Every structure is written in structure tokens, then in C-alpha cells.
Image 1 (tube, rainbow, N blue to C red):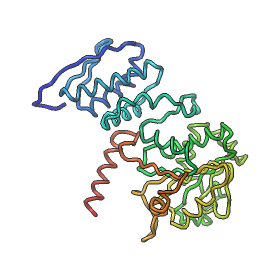
Image 2 (spheres, rainbow, N blue to C red; image 1 turned 180 degrees about the horizontal axis):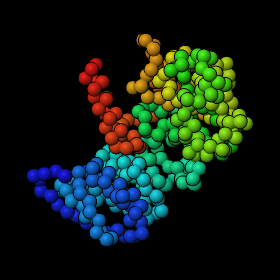
Image 3 (cartoon, one colour; image 1 turned 30 degrees about the horizontal axis):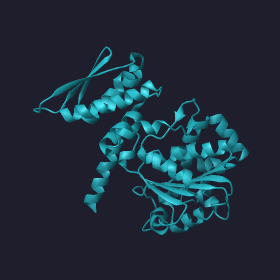
Image 4 (cartoon, helix red, strand yellow; image 1 turned 60 degrees about the horizontal axis):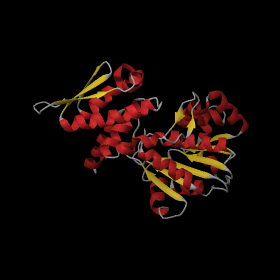
Length: 325
């Protein structure tokens, strides 16, 4: 709470008390996020919420609470990520469009819950994937790039617009020389593909995912194994693309076949390439930026849908990098 500044109090009526738990969150976690994000105090009294703070902060909190209440009334189950997205859109001045994010359902996950975009950045990303052959998603961890890419791939597979899903990433930590690691190819590659597997399990469940892997409908392989192939009627995702070289990026992009889509995701602040090797993702931004059917979507810390502290950590490191440079 801000001290030594005139405080005001406004109240908002909860139209349907049965939605209160959904609105408040577990142990009032949603309300606590709003309190911290907008520097206000929120107290519940029966079917009423009292919001106290500086007038501008209270006005913002009331606007956000009304939008969240509208979502609960339409049957949307709220989580912390929804509140964080609302706070970010409020900060950007785009809160009026908050409800629009929930109109389109991309797919249902394994538990039957609808998967939707969480912010404007994710909406741009999904639109780019739908309308282009190759989409680059560039930005920090926590923006949902990998998860949404897998969601769009599974949706395309279910719709029959592709026949298979191919998932790959450069195994930089092992120098892509995986032969010295124990086990078969799957056992060698799995540690590097964990985020992709997690997304697949969340969307389809582990059993269904395993069956599709066994049948070859879903293929998971290190980037080095893409060489010399043409991928027709496939949805192809390259993750951790900041760790590709120029040659690897060119090799990957030229695997695109008829009836296929490609997604290339990466975070250029997390390049692990040795020495002075230039990132193929960084170079692709300048080389391919004006090509038709290729679109770049840039995410920022404002698009992070994890805990609010994650966005603050990203910003802090970015500022530190600027000072060091």
C-alpha cells in the first residue's frame, strides 16, 4: 500500500456468489495477485469486495475485477495465469480486449479443459501459425511458445490437415554427438526434449502420446537427424532454435515439404553455442524478414504467463545485460 497519499475505497458487488471461489482463487490467490500488482488492498465482505488504495490504482483494480467477473459468469475457470494476463493487458491499455482472448478454443487438453491464448502476444503467435507456412516465435521462457506450438500441432493432426508431427531441437549440451551417451536414440534424446514431452502429455496424456510415438505419427529427434529429409504433410517444430548455427537453420528450413507447417522457437538471450559461433536464429531474423509466408512473432517479458516474479527476473537480467554492454 502507498503511504502518505490520500486513500479511497470503492466496492464491487459479486453478481453470482457461487462464482466467488473461482474469482478469488484458492486461498484468495487471485486477489493477492491483484493487490500486489496494483498496490491496493482487497477485502471480501459476503457478496461484496472492498478495494482500498490510491484512486488511480483502485480504478484499475475495479476495472480488472469486473472483467474477471464477466469471465466467471460465462463459465470460464480462472487461474493465476489469467489474472497475470489481465494485469499485463491493463498495463498495456488493452484490457477492453481481455474477454476476446477467451472466445476461441484451440483444443481441449487431456483433462478436458479448453486451451486458449492467454495474452495478445500469444494471439498474434497463433494467428501467425494459422496463416503462414513458417512461423518464428522469439522471446523469453514462460511465454508459452513451446506449449502453444504443440497445441497447434496436435490440433492440426486431429483435423487431418497434417499426417504427422515432427519435434526437434539441437542437442548443444552434447555437441549433437550423441553416440557416447548410453542407451538407444530415444533414451539419448529424451532429456533434451523434456519440455516438448511435457506439453504432449498435458494435451494428450502419456499413454496416447506413447502410442503415437510407437506408430511414428509423432517423431522426436535431434536436429542433426533432419538432414537429407523432405517433410511432407507434417507439422514440424524446432525448439531452442537460438542454439542452431546458420548452416543448421538453413538445413532445417529447407526440409519444408508440401502440406507442411514449421514453427521455429527460441530465446536469443539464452544462446549456448560455443565460442564466437553466430546463432542461426539471430541471422534468420535479418535474412528472412521480408519473405512471404514467413512471419516473426516477438515476445517480451510482458507476455510471460508464469508467476509475476518471472517477468521481473527477466527484466532485471535484461537491464543488467545493458549495463554490462
